[in-house]
Length: 491
Image (tube, rainbow, N blue to C red; front, side, top):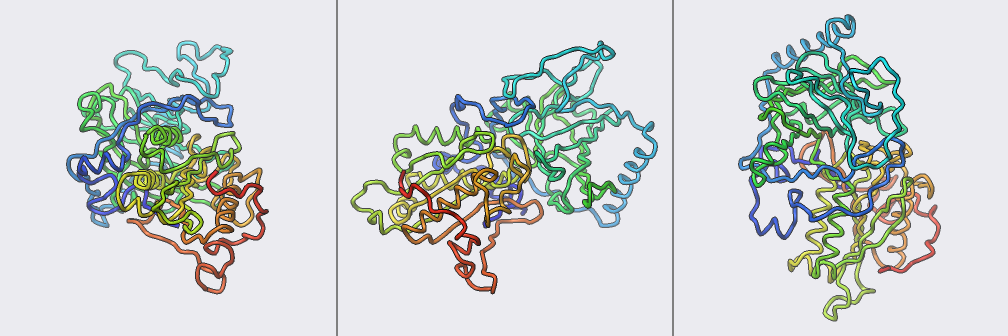
């Protein structure tokens, strides 16, 4: 397993998001995350849920910052501890004495909007369709002097369950747990409108983070995207790490056996009346992937270097793509039957967006014109599954599928019905291994606690090499998968 930190190498000069712009030639060849695609697929994704989803998702184009965005310098230990103690005491006071805060719910992604002027009346409002081009806001400002932020997360990959205003310019935020679970609250992606501008800093507290450690403890900051900044200068705007006073700490609340944590940060909005998006990492939606695959399929040169087909369908009915990348029909290339196999997969955990950006770069490179890519295509057959868990990605989960399963824990005995992508991927590798040597299986992830880029290798039960555990690359339980009916390699 190759793991990447939460979409950036947590060093002073990150190669992923915080670096200076790369040369234009590299941008055009690799098509990194800030490259805009021409159009969306015509078929919307399927959520498998009754709650509505706005689609197409927001188009948030990105250009790398002109200068590196450094990590926040660490505070002195005693000052840091004192700041956290003060915030913990304030949270405890608000729990004990609810009257000291506003406690005003201004957003809830699961309830229907109700105008303030008719709140006492019961209104029968038909529920919106599961996928819709727009939704009315949960809250509308009541006049020019109302500075309440207008939150939204009901778009693809979005996650914000509820926003509670606790002070004039402070909000407690709760993330939605993964579908059919009561846990995994780490990934966040939401927008705010009606921003007050720089004169009034706004404090946001995400109060139900479920992990006991985070790179937010070591200087990482949430990402912010500004619509006004983009309209003013599209070529030099994009996701920026502009939050300050970032703290991450245990808040004393518990969910089952799990201690919850608070991520708090303060934002000074550059523009008044702006629409800004916040995210844990650079979002990479299922629609983004499908659009990119359609784009390279329509490219006369790249389309000759790969074939795309459907590996399976998910519980919600979304297609899981598998790509075969190699040299097709070239006399100078190694004979097809002599080429060894390489399998690459990504995004089994929806909140680990860094894995999709790595996979995006891999696809751009392997289907590109470089001599290095041609040598690889001439000598290997690549089987690539760029998104193993599209259902979880679409609905904004962090770790689970639509059934609530962590698919990465079901490789040993995957169910054809509950874990179709894992079952099909395992069959794919077994079929490939029956025809040729598979020299590499790489599953791309991201990590919320570790810095830089690192790799885990498989090991047998007795500490042996990659084949000691049986099956391809030591993948346990291989014998439990039935022979595939269709063993054609280049279908």
